Image (cartoon, rainbow, N blue to C red):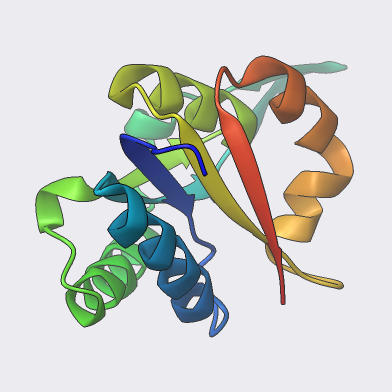
Length: 146
């Protein structure tokens, strides 16, 4: 088995997230890798400037603090359950594919762990961007079915 150095677990904060982190932690313990958690709030609001033109709004300029605060709280609870340092948790907002690719490169991740659901959670991401992620990410990807 390859010994990974940096593992990134992309969680959707559903009940299945704990199982996903547990499986990633098993790999992390075998390879003595760093384990990081990320949750991406899919946020691409559009403002109509009139007529047929839609203009994307900068996520930082829109107050969506209630959703962000709830997600941050759940992410930190999950991290605490698995004894993962808060510094290794990221809550991102934006296009999932773009955010994940950028974070993988920033953290020099060599394994990304994601979950697959039948009709919700990461399956929405997979239906539209899995192929893009597979080609865009410079690391291995482990898909865990729930």
